[in-house]
Length: 189
Image (tube, rainbow, N blue to C red; front, side, top):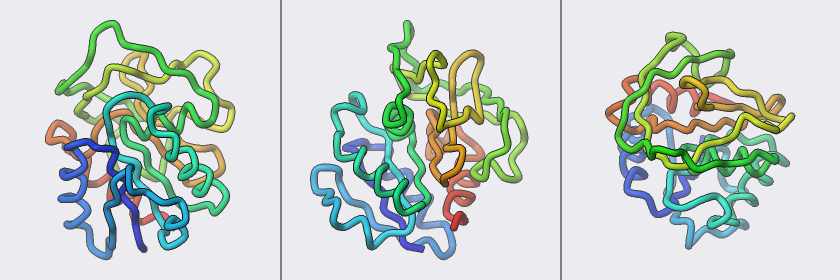
């Protein structure tokens, strides 16, 4: 397994790196978005799109990463910005929250079985750091919602491909099961 972690200029990326270092058999490389070359994607079996500032349209190369994952059926996990990018790539819409959620822990209800949530309880605590969220209106047909917090979408997966998005931050200390989620992702083949 050779994982590519795409760093979208976000300090949380270093927390993800620290968790990946603790996972047995996880060989990974970090490439900053600005240095990402689509021609390099063939060397990797798994992709993580990190959190980041701004919105998906500010990171157009990420759509090519999603296309590569889709065409080659390679596991992809989007975190926060990465989650939003996956959802908009397949036709979803974002909206700005009335109240920004930064550094808050919320209960997340896992509402559908998902490989990244294997062996986790149906309710977990998770750290949120976002001001935009995916709209449930006109939700993409190719994706399914796997977790929510109240009315907010917290996780999605593609219906037929190993593509997953989580709005919350598994690398945050506010997400006690975060490492387990990343371990589950690295086990995908």
